[in-house]
Length: 293
Image (cartoon, rainbow, N blue to C red; front, side, top):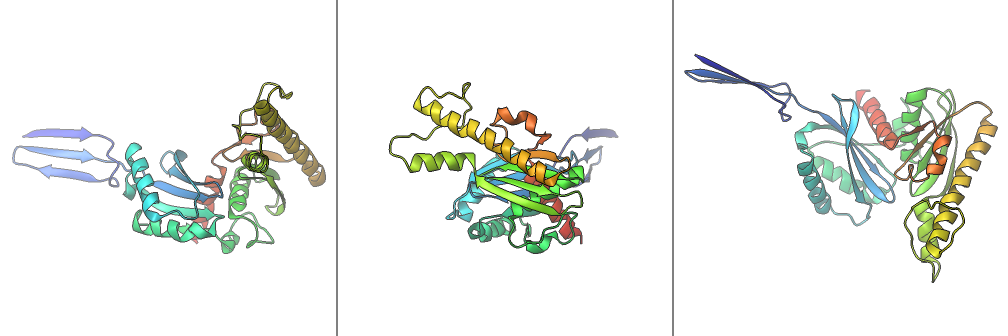
């Protein structure tokens, strides 16, 4: 009798032992599944889909689509299907889905997409989601769920006083105390928001790329706008952090996140950690805490 054994990574079913008995041989196939948590961060500019590999314990894929209040489920499914094919992701690998959304108009589309395409009931983070967390706020229905996700992930990492700077559509500074209580939030227009505002409200100034020029002295129109916005925001962030830390009066861990967190290289010494996945990690932690309870 001939015995043939194959070992390979077959990511479709969980720890399945497949035996094909034949008269003259047996075939054994061992398989291993990569289960993933899907975090959906619906912001004002982009909807980010983050995929957390539970075995590797890290975020392995990220997909972005522009936020559009007229977004259809068909368009979302089409875009995601292509992304899944390109990255060899199978629908049955997605075992849990958590959503943070600051755009209520698209929530029904996201929930329907999860149920019909992913065949999952998603968990939508809301004001009641924070009751079982290590962090707390006195205004759970007012503070953005994205900010609560940032705070949750940062406090889980340090369990100490933190300031989280999120470079998104809005530039936000969120402070949390050593007991997990949110101390306050500051909000200013984000980098892209500032540039778009300048471009849309003036006749001759062009819309420019977010590229930090070598000199703070602008020598043409494009560089003048870039240096004004980017070096100006460098001073804004440094000044805000200094003022907040003085008021808090104890040492703080400073964490940066958001899609634009790496653009201002002039601020690299201001942050202890730069984590683009901080919001996604907060979505995962909040969702799992509530589902387990």
